[in-house]
Image (cartoon, rainbow, N blue to C red; front, side, top):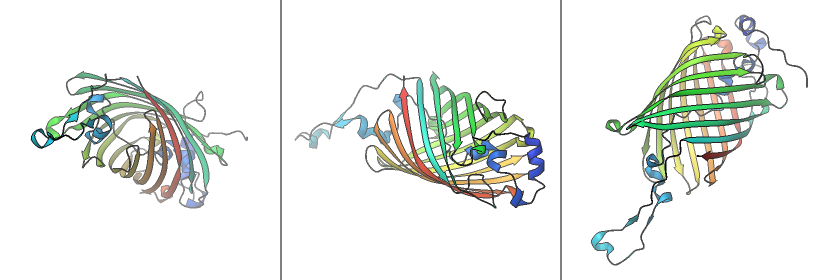
Amino acid sequence: MTPKIWFPLTHLFALAVTLAPGLLPAQTFLDPSRAASNTSSTVAPQVRESSTEPLAELEEDNTFAPISPGDNDIGQQLILKRQEKARSFSAWVDSSMFWTDNAANVDIGKFDDWFYNGGVNLAWQKRLHSRFYADAYIGQHWYLYDEFDVLDYQVGDATLGTLIILPELANTILHAHYQYQRITQNIDDDAIYETHNLRIGAQKTFLIDRLNSFNTNILAVFALDTDPDLLQRHEYAAQAAYSFKITRRLIFTLAGRVAYYDYFNLDGRQDWFQTYSASLTWRPKEYLELSAHYNYAINRSSRDVFDYETQIAGPSIALKFRF
């Protein structure tokens, strides 16, 4: 494998805004934090306490008593089960293999490649009082390309914040988190991208019936400090997702997300980023999740050299445990 050399991003961006689009260095190389967003269907934090599991899962947790002649008088009887004790910690590992038709995220000179995306995750959530929950997460993910391994990078994330349930707004969940993100070529290298963010948003799930649900999410991410500062930006996003339960353990999901990025140290750069995705998820066991994904991403920038479109598709597997 040929050695990889990371030049200072300030020098690369100086080239990026002056060179012709056809000679533009790969944006996956220049800004891997944005490249990672091509594969993630950002989901707002959820309350994981067992007593707040969606009512759409009712048929999985409870059964009805056998039909009897007395049903005409007292109605059908639902057999309730004791709720499990809340488990504060969640740990999971995930692995995906994706094909993309635009590995470098460029407008001209696209090339396809396969890449591996896998990681380890640990989350903690604790009810503080009534509607307030403490929420924390730490994770590390690897992005490894098949042919163009010069694009490889690793992403470390940590968040700490709170969730607030609002019964007066149909159980809408407000969330506010501090986020630290660090991207390296190898985990023990100096950071090539490092940022401290404040993330604020709200999400609401609408349960249409036992098979259909609809989720909405709005989010604002304020960059408090970023190195290199050329990549510092605020983000404002809205997402909607529809889920259909084909069977008890097989779920089909369609999602769309629109985000606006405001770079305030890069010559007035402003981006509109759209992602559309379809996924099929099978959960044969409580701890096992198998999925197939298709993502289509479009980036439109005030600086034309940063425009691109990409398609990403592939399978993934996750092992999840709560304790």
